[in-house]
Length: 303
Image 1 (cartoon, rainbow, N blue to C red):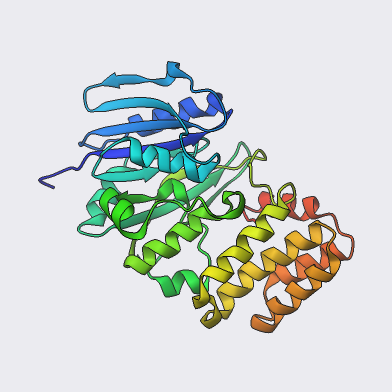
Image 2: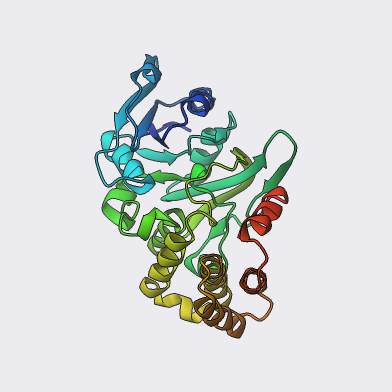
């Protein structure tokens, strides 16, 4: 390529300084020839200036979240704090492989958004996950959530985001599902480019701020918000069933049996074989929700 655009990598972080350094090192260690700025945005925790550094073509900036508390506000703070032509996201527990940015920028071309494959790992297991298609449309995302299109793989044109499909939504209850909602809006703007090759390692851990067992009330509210604001789901029964099945599981975990049964019914009517409906039914019948979630995590899956 004749031109390697400057990239801003945004890391929202909260009380994970031990893992944060590994994440920053994986970003600074990219074999990308262009300029790279890493913005560590401390959310609901005091900024740690010891992470800041500067070298030729590479720098780390530390700042506080100046918008709404939560991951959406933190990401938007990072996006608006720098003027790199491209913007990338990375969670503070994840790691980029050295070729990630070079491969994605090459594949992006004149597009506005690109993702890549991932590897989920911990000390015991690892699982590769990717979308095979080189391009993902809004219809694809409505039919089925694609969890391997993880926010730590996102690389976007800053102008398309700020002046086109928009920043990360800070309206979603609790910020849950903000990554999927951003994908939906970006896909409305135009097809998303995708690389099947692995570019990011996602650490499997039990300290997520969005554990479905701990925050099921927020999850239920956020997913109902999404179904209301995307009427396109009416024409995508599989995608609707995935979200309604999660709502059913959350309501069952809360002990709201009548609500859980109502959402189970909606799920099964649209997709009779949707497994989340039957997992929700198991929880409503007394099976501990955390046992189900733990078993799924050991398989590299989630609700």
